[in-house]
Image 1 (cartoon, helix red, strand yellow):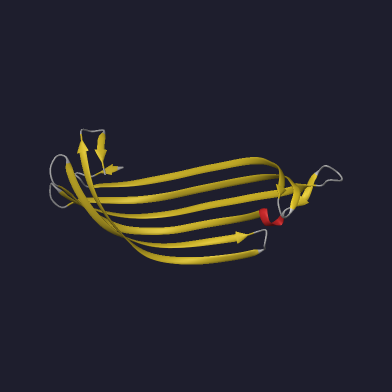
Image 2 (cartoon, rainbow, N blue to C red):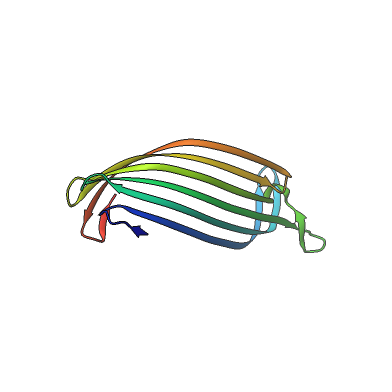
Amino acid sequence: RHRFDKRGRTMSLNLTHSINTSDRDGLTLSFNDRYARGKDTLDQTSNTFVDGKKWSATLSYTEPLTSKDQLEFFYTKSQNENGSDQGTYRRDRLTGIYSILVSSLTNSFANDNFYDRGGMNYRHQLNRNWSFGGGLYLQEAKLVSDNITKGTSMSRPFINWLPNASLQYRKGKSTYMR
């Protein structure tokens, strides 16, 4: 964050990055006795691996208009990559090995979501405790999804105007409600 000589004028750059993964194993063993269909057994195992990466950068500039009014201009660039791989297998009664693929419960895909967002916010300080504001953003986003299991892919662009409004109550330096 850079502060200028003029009180309230700032420029900041915020960089974020996150990574998450999960690996889950499941076993389903169910003995069923149904009136019309008779007895059957469901014996299957599944493994799900999910990974995600996200990064974003936001450049923000604030300009004081008066001692109680402020404008903020900002630009954000973001990318979110997610993947999931789930395999489900039924137990082979002859070998005892979970080797029969359950295609309706098996899926592998990769999703990428990119967006560029720019906008402006206005904030007014009513008094020591209360402030309100509003703004308007323009966002261009693109979703790319690859269903690896089915061998299909799709890409969708989106352009949206995103209005916002806020009312904030602040009591002290660490307690506030928005």
